[in-house]
Amino acid sequence: MTGLRTDQVSAGRSFADGGADPVLVLGGGLIGLAIAHQLARRGESVQVLSRRRNEAAGFVAAGMLAPHAEGLEGAMLALGQRSLALLPQWVGQIEADSGLPCGLLRSGIVVPFATSAEREAYPTAALGEPLDRAELEAEIPGIGAGFGCGLLFAQDGQIDNRRQLMRALERACVERGVAFAEGTEVLELLSDSERVLRGVRLIGADGLVRSLPCRRAVLACGAWSASLLPGLPVVPIKGQMLSLQGPRRALRRVLFGPGTYLVPREDGLLVVGATSEPEAGFATGLTPRGQQQLEAGLTALLPEAASWPPMERWWGFRPGTPDRAPLLGPSPINGLWLATGHYRNGVLLAAITSHWLAALMGSQRGGAELGERSRSGGLTAADAALLASFHWDRFASPAEIAQGSTRHT
Ligand code: GLY
Image 1 (tube, helix red, strand yellow):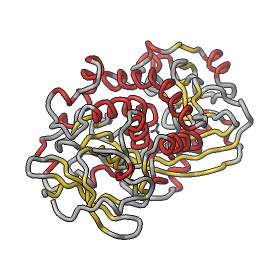
Image 2 (cartoon, rainbow, N blue to C red; image 1 turned 90 degrees about the vertical axis):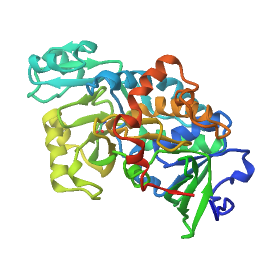
Image 3 (cartoon, helix red, strand yellow; image 1 turned 180 degrees about the horizontal axis):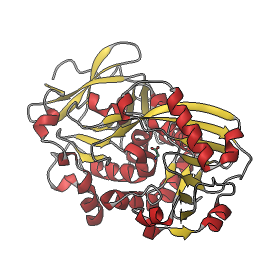
């Protein structure tokens, strides 16, 4: 490899200050920051490279913590439950390091149904508490007349990702010494003929193209992840949202309806989500159709809320994979790790993703060759078994993903 210069990528603390074998986090969204924070807590020197952090799905999502209410199944349900169990401890670390609240609320989530037959067919029906119409009205005062019964998932909840968690995590990272290089676009990954990571080529906020050596990096670019590994099966799934200002405590529970959900924050803000538009690709902006869909869903779920004043309307891009499950763990390039493809569950899964990735990357400290053991190094046997369901190689061969995606040095 030629022409490597580390001295110029120095928005924030430079690696020169931070000890040997630093880690690059590619992507400054929720997943990237969560991993950076956990790595820094383990004493690693970490730098986050991000292009435009304000596009991150972590700023867009509604923050539902809903493995049961969203009806996840199989390994995805197990992963969601594992992360849900870890969340209080994870949030506690962020709040302790940042001194800021994250807005975690064990509010419970209600899923309404038109008929009891629909309710019984729900994948996680056995894990919720059945509600008849009267009980549904008691849980969700003012619920639309079209819903005859429901399921209460008291174990699920929400977190105020957009206004609190993201800001607290930024603060926690800074307090733990993570360096940031916002406005930096990674152009390509640099690897040697043995497919070992050697660095990245990037363009900085100053417009200069340069190379930065590294032996460990994590790809956490969300919907944009395939731009660095073109064979990676990650595509954008656009979602539009809106928020309304309602009376405080008009709604205690999150309401997860068909096609639309309502997430009440403690201050009365009601977040309404979300469209799902795979055909939109990376098309930016609101559409009348998308906003009408949200408003129709809102009216059906909670008619009185249709008159509450709208506060914000926004959109973003979920990172989707063919099986709607994330890509976690090693990649076809030794030293490059994957933490992407979280689709509808990035907020829920940030806790377990960051816990696992920090352990895995920590076990490769010193640039150790990635052997079978370090594919799951530092994880319990149960976690390693669960992680195996989310390896990238369930989709493609190393050649398909690595070919043409990295420059050999
Ligand atoms: N988890 C909800 C959504 O992605 O819309």
